[in-house]
Each structure stands twice: as C-alpha cells, then as structure tokens.
Image (cartoon, rainbow, N blue to C red):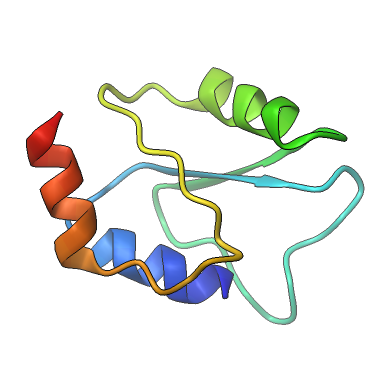
Length: 84
C-alpha cells in the first residue's frame, strides 16, 4: 500500500515525500525509499506522526495522506496541489 501511494505522488510530480513510520518499525518488505523520500519515526497517535512528518518537510504546500488508503490517484493529488 505504501509503494502504491508513493508511486501516485511521484506520478503527480511531487518530488519531496516524507513517510512517518510507527516507532521502531522498518519499511515493509523489500521497499526502498526512492530518491527524494525521507522516512521519520512516527508517534503513538496519528497526530504525532503527522507532526513528525511536517517537522521533516521543507515543503509548501504540504499534503497529508494516509497510505492505508492507497487508491489516491495522481490526478486527485495534482488537483489538490492546484487548489492550494
């Protein structure tokens, strides 16, 4: 699911991606962070993970996506950026 989401953001032209992982968890399977992607330890609550990812992000605007819902499309991501 994570790879699907990262691929969608990349296809939408997003170049800097920060992934918040549960504390102590490694990346799933043989997934390797693509260039321009940063992994940070998340927190106990989703809000803590979002805060950690925002702190690691240098971007403006910033989009927050829950990779557990991987059906986001590049078109939806690009439209969201344009709307900002």
